[in-house]
Image (tube, rainbow, N blue to C red; front, side, top):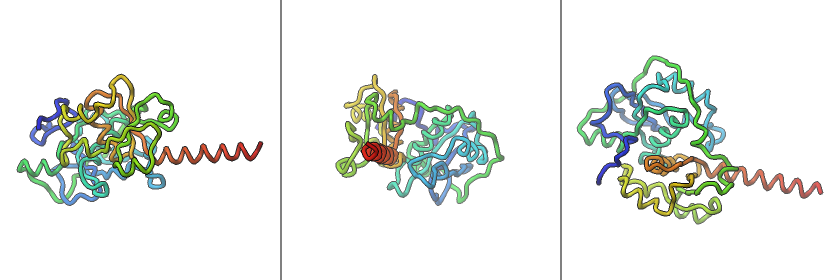
Length: 255
């Protein structure tokens, strides 16, 4: 399999010596030497798992971990509740891009690829001196309900076929997130082009799953191929739909 040509992905042997390695896993059992650990869940509002914490809180979390926006980063990690694979890494990658981070890559294959390369692991993560993370918010990377409903974008439901058939955003195309994966590795660029052949590059794409974690795999793959892609969540859509129905019912009762 030929690796994608764009340098959003990096192999263990190509990680720059000055890069900070960030593990976004839930409860990792081992770490790449020198890796900083921030679970992707720390960035999510625990009262609404479809929403991120506010920008200032995310910036504080990153700064407290010793990361600034100008630092070169390599992200890896697995989401065990998601069934494994790189969705944690791609989600954290998207989040950091959303915060304005530019010098960032995903370790293709994660810690498994690291160990398969014969490289060592450690039992604990690294603590860095605190820094200041100054975000440059990228609003264009996240869709809201009105935009998803507007018809301005192609909508991709990255959930399973079964979930898609039980209900989805009207007009969505179903591309399950794991179609973009070869095991735990992002597929080659030529393979991804075939998977996304029903999409056009001259129109934006909104990608969603229930909370967005798995959607990030498709978002990452589309972004790597040059699509104008945005993330969204089905929970936000359902919440907004319920609110619209409630308001309509109130209006009808008041007539």
